[in-house]
Length: 111
Image (cartoon, rainbow, N blue to C red; front, side, top):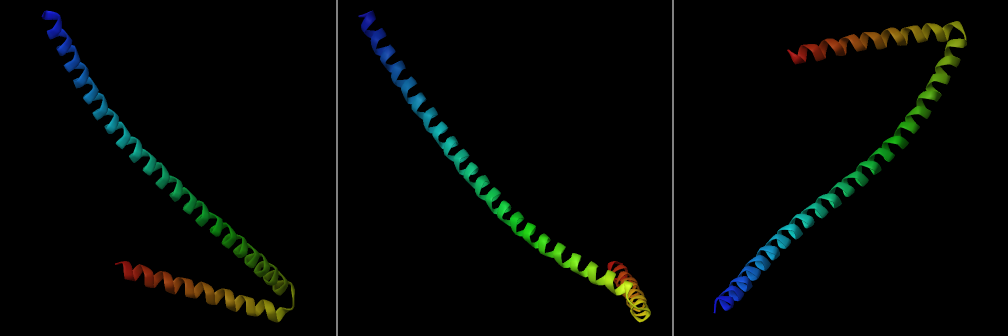
């Protein structure tokens, strides 16, 4: 009779361990699902950022081309006659004055 009690006790212990294993397996499955979702979100975010950076690369290339052309025009203007140099000085002084006016207005707006 003692063995029969041990058999049921062992059977009850197996059932209890089985239930505990199933609970832990469900918990693990939930964590794995959460990790998979997080990994997919990170992947999507990385793809979006790569797409954004590719767009910025093409924008910088077009700006580089624009600045190169402007630099060439500026060089040819300075190498040409005296009238162009005078105009260039007036434009440079005007830009410097505008810069200082904007600097003054921005510093005044902050205080």
